[in-house]
Length: 254
Image (cartoon, rainbow, N blue to C red; front, top):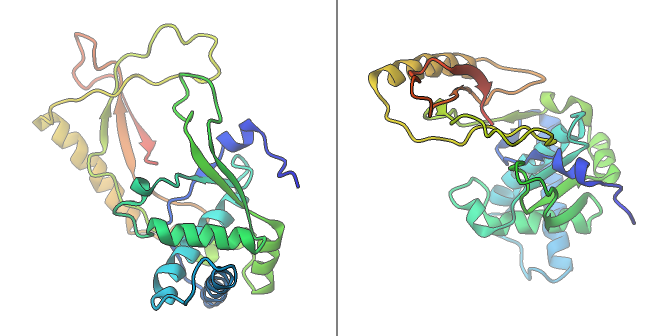
């Protein structure tokens, strides 16, 4: 079976942050059912001999978080339904979902026919594109979408069933060097190289203003969208006359 993907489609994948939980009664019931099916499949295939005592906790949370990422991406025009997530153990350190739990989850969903999976590999050759990384790609199958509908969770209305939680940026000011001059003709226009800088009183005042804005938006309930917080990116930081007066536009934090 072909998954019908191209490098361009894989490159457009969104990040699976695994930081969401179901809020509607329908979504909660769906996640409980799906987690139980994953656990049962794991036992039937011999991956595990016994059910986890905390299956309803850790696996349940991971199932809800991953399902939310998958459904949101399925309804985004640019991502083609794909999400990416590194499967390296180190990438899960300190995260809400443990590596072993996620491994059980994605393999279980794949075994149930609910998940397309492309193993980590290089998806771009442009040295100026920072997405030339090895990371696994995932996508909900039509069977999973139908399963959601059958359990009264319409995939196109994912924002009515799940709530995403993001950490606001601790330091919402970024400084970049001047862009390189040899990028003309490249498909991806590079940004300037990140620079270290001293957090002077002037920088502290800029950051305080951005934090105040971020904290205000974080208290609001957004539907059909999300808020990760803003950062201000200043450019040409290596210019001799730079004094936090170049660039500084507000950019959505990722």
